[in-house]
Image (cartoon, rainbow, N blue to C red; front, side):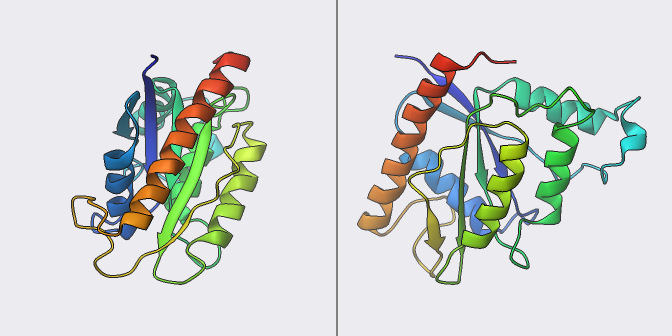
Length: 189
């Protein structure tokens, strides 16, 4: 049985983010064979192509973190019907300079939580468009829009609702299967 390294991005910079709690829940319910590490984005300066000739250490660290994993998982809130600026900035850093896109052939999945009933659906569509341009194969189904209600998760990511726990467990099992399929077909760069 293969073990896959999964780097995950939390789209919110807040330490108390509900999406950070969701990321803990996803790690808890993930099947064996997936190992996780957060790819931090909070210390990245704003991307500017003037840096392309001499990438700062934060940009290099981001690219190295993505290169060290087999797949990426995006756990993101929705800000103003799109993805948070910090997450978009990280994607810009990772995909530049031209010809060194860190997401090429890197399997990805997108999920998010929101207090609203449509639970990050619009942000996820926006993120999927960006990832498509970045040539990242995406797990398009199942889609996962989580309405975050008080008590659904504990602070350390325990899922208190059995139906939600099963859904998230199935999502992560499907992601593992997707990673295996993509890595069987596409060479890593």
